[in-house]
Length: 263
Image (cartoon, rainbow, N blue to C red; front, side):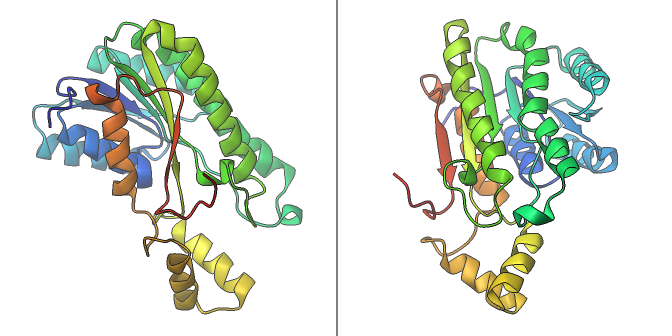
């Protein structure tokens, strides 16, 4: 299927690892040039080398980005725009949330995480808007999470962070739609990234299980029998960026193997 992505330019935040890195790989495979935004420059540089070697027709640029610092944001977006010549696709993947019980999460953790998402997401999107307005296939894809819709134990922080991200997504879809820019969100369920071990350990402790038993329990919770892999999310991101998603905007799509109970 021709996706209409060859020759496009994408900016990906949180690109140094996990979901962000996998989305960058999937877009590069479709001929998209990539600006890799992240705090871990060594990981981003390694990914840039990997992509350049595998897809010599695309361009890659590494941009150091700390979403909590406005100077860092402006420098990173300017560098990416200069290197690629524009932006057709913005993937906001940076940010997370501290898992745990309410009494175990300090105020500075709340402030730090909210300053990255949704506030950092808003800041980088605002900077990229002049570039996106010049594209004839402009896409904004925000990575949120299923806890934004279905809060659960130990998600006292991830629930409001992701709920706010979904609210921003819907509001921007309405605001930017008349300018030809689609805005959508992807809600990953439990995903096998670097934070998977943290969830396994917490589940094991809470349910008095071994780590292996905790992994089996978490897999059984998913109707399709396994937790999400970053590649599962990347496939949807590529579709939402494609020409085939021209009339999809303002939606949040779960990628969780059916685990969410709500309709």
